[in-house]
Image (cartoon, rainbow, N blue to C red; front, side, top):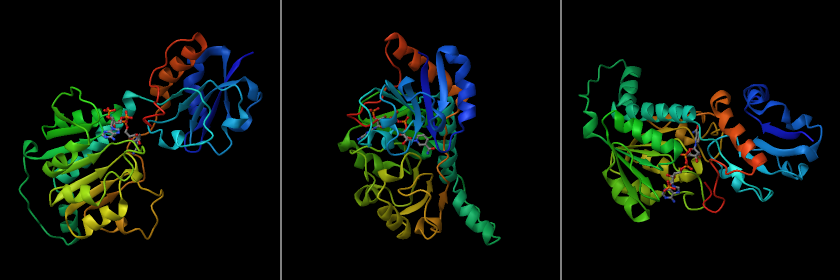
Length: 311
Ligand code: NDP
């Protein structure tokens, strides 16, 4: 019997993923869209992004769930997830895209672009002398696959770059801080805080009123990971009372962001619709094929997710 890989994603195009994977998987793995599965019993692998309720129950012989993205919060929180290994994408191209966006957002605040945009709207020549990168402290919260690339990219530009994670590690140009106790001090010294934390039970609303209060007056906040890591009401308050000078936000508790949400119109805030980085079929396909082969041959998986940690 030929093994089947079932594909299910709202935003990602089936044809592009099939075309990238087919040459790597050959004839012994059939690739089928979830709506057109010919033999559910033959499905051993699922490549999914937020599949609908009841999806997994259709495939009794699943052996591997591949998350079509880096963030697995929505997958691991499901009660209907089968008890099989879960892998995520860990794609250098995805990392580059994220690091580029993080650098853009850091530069937006470091070079005071919101100030110049506001001045331009008033047709006002509002010179502010730029500060050197090494005088500006950036804290990157979360140093995972994407967070570490973002932090090293920021460090490469010469910013005084700090990172926060649960465990120590060496990252070029980045001073690494670990554990809950280290967070308030780190937030207090940063001019720009970049959130790259996965959403887990331990990180939900981790950026709350106390965390924003711990930040320097005039600091800027960037969130590129998950909206639910932030208490959005606390963020709105910190922006309204000008404790924070601005924010660059790509992710929100409820997406799309509601038209009447205060974040749309607060000064210094840039809203982008969850696109800091996306999975790219060509560059991600080899690691997906590698994990499918590993299951077929009984070898170790790469990029496996810990259900216990939630990332
Ligand atoms: P990883 O899962 O690889 O790494 C997570 C990092 O967060 C690790 O460094 C981990 O520490 C740290 N961390 C987790 N929990 C805690 C905690 N309680 N306290 C301190 N540190 C913690 O994530 P990635 O870097 O690959 O991606 C980050 C997130 O980006 C994804 O989870 C996803 O939600 C989001 N994302 C957003 C996209 C967008 O377009 N906006 C696109 C893709 C992803 P340690 O290393 O010590 O374990």
